[in-house]
Length: 181
Image (cartoon, rainbow, N blue to C red; front, side, top):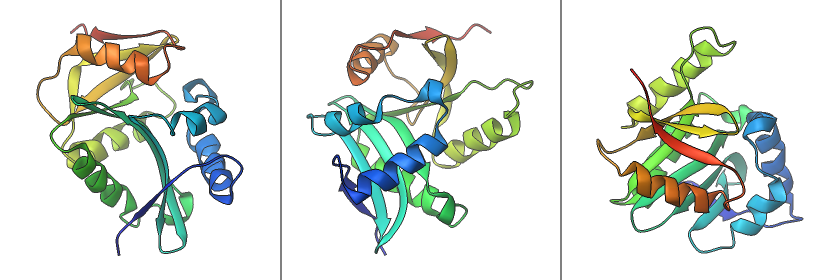
């Protein structure tokens, strides 16, 4: 079966399901106001989607794109269907949607002393299996540091930073910085 992508519209049953998963999957410091994501999904180059297989809600994605970049900001699989291959299927679908654009996403920086270090390692391994590599760059937002992963060996960090700032509505200070060795 193929996955069905449904735009998240305000005040719908779908929005309620997506909001519940969104609030549960992402820590408060990583979230945008939900209503902003709903509104922005109607703008050109932004997509906020609920994912279904038949009538089963399986996850959510929020991504932005232009001619050069495909930037996945939020991706979560419903706990009801985790470990059933949906994450990989969704990534394959998103890579097809990205076409020849540089597909970029962020993960929490690898810190051995972090409470969720094991989860961070698993997350990086998942993306590695799906063709992404940790780049030499970090994404710094509100004091938090994330590794930049990409599906291509090179991307222009200056152009990506400009795009990322637009993707977050220029409301959140962020920077793309070369990681020091």
